[in-house]
Length: 364
Image (cartoon, rainbow, N blue to C red; front, side, top):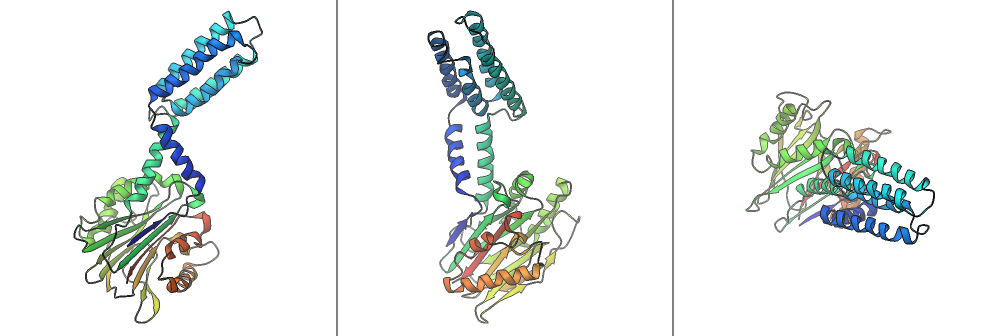
């Protein structure tokens, strides 16, 4: 069984995502036709009701167009509105045309400036935002842990700093076709929120081609080589890679500058820190070694990996944070550890000031 949680996303952005998907599903031609009909209604109604339908009637159309139209279509609409405005001023009912035309001209200028800043990707604001939404969702879905064979349970949870739509923490999970092995890599890209969005997406794509296809002992080294070639300025990432044989329970674990994993030993009845096999962060050294530690998950055992936002805080060291995390893990034992990762990222020691992520694997 596998469970996914993303408690860092409040309701409002989720609702907005649905609106973006609905609006972006409509073609540019349909948007342009609707706005054109709106402007045509002004041409018909303004001579009849000049007070009730003033020239400022164009402003809502311009604002909507700025959100839904790509730049070329926006230019076409603005040109049409300019012609209509000139015709209204010259041929319209005898009244002073001052405030309305100026307000329309200012609005048009602002909308065109905003549209020009988006012209590089050639789509309207809603469509562009939807592209970002889909990229973010793809990043999160890449780490979805597939349903595991009977006797195994896994869950993950992530929360972004300050509720940002993008997080520097992500994972990649691969279950072999015969359900014999599960590989997971949990990554923390340096930085926060949208600043690291492109780096997270790029590294996620690279790791998706490595995990499950490359020898587990080479995954971190290959990821480090990728970051070295990428040449990110002040760019590095920490990671932990887990490879589990679901038939025997044997696992191997490799760290790249990441906080140490913790393991619950059911026989001893206590949590222990896996402190061995710590390598440097990805992207810092040209050819580092990433030693691995091996062990066995017996029935009742569990393994927990997490990012530094869960245990680090400005007022306490990592050791205190790990003690706090283990106390929460002890409290959740009566519930079979279910929901532990969600609790950890919600209550992470860094608070909203850092991204948080946690993954739990348990053998029933």
